[in-house]
Image 1 (cartoon, one colour):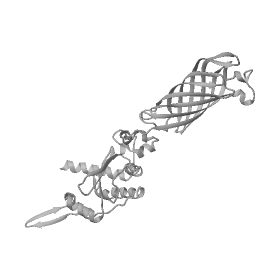
Image 2: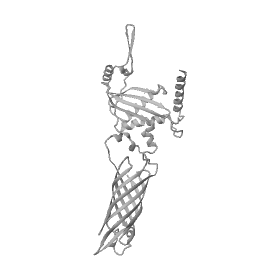
Image 3: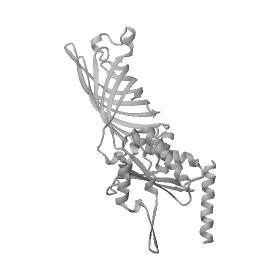
Image 4: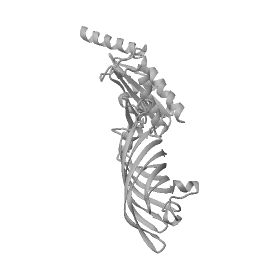
Length: 362
């Protein structure tokens, strides 16, 4: 008994220290120190996110029935948890929270020399009667557990008649969505709920401005280009597949001059269009963090159309993604032999291409 009493006292001291702002280090290392109330806010914030996204069922005429806390948490903290949950429900939704004092009451009866203590929680018929009288359609029960390596809050919503559970979920501070957002993680890609629901395509668009050296009728031409790419991201954003359209302009023609003797001998002096089928592999690890530079490798195959010319192209590229919306990319490709018809003669166009670009992702 003495040992158990000392263990409870030590646990209460640890809890009190964390509430006073003394950070308690999780089991996994002393570097990740957090304040107790910050961790509670992360867990409650996850519940608020589910409220905003409509992932909580049974919010109509809701009453918080039971709040259970672990032994190392003072019983008075139950009221604080109940107030926090009530505040988020009223703040985020239009649901009505009904107080039900009789639901938590106890009834004592005397039959001869025997005293019987009963509670509505152990009498479904009486509980359903009280709920109907108070206008309660659903009950919310909460279990709050605090440990040095994290906080766990489990919740479920049930119906008074029959006691059937219509919604249930557990929130863990170590996998908290709110904490992940503060670290700069795009948490939607690792959301366990999304993995079990119907697949929703994630489409990414990008515009790119680039400078490239392209094989031309007479040698290699320096070109300024613009590109638009549309891809679908899959495999938890680790892969992308889609199409890209490019337009190149001979940089010397922008000043009114040309490196070739005739405009018709320059594939990039007028209308031209390159269309590519693209597949990319993103090196983002287990989850994408916008605070870190990420790499992406892609392969493309397609062709270019210009006046009197139609030829294929093979291309590889690598890019560095900075933040969420910007990237610096490089490309290296090869054009197999194709004929450009200039007047009555044909000229073979073939050779490597290479360039550098800046992209905006949205």
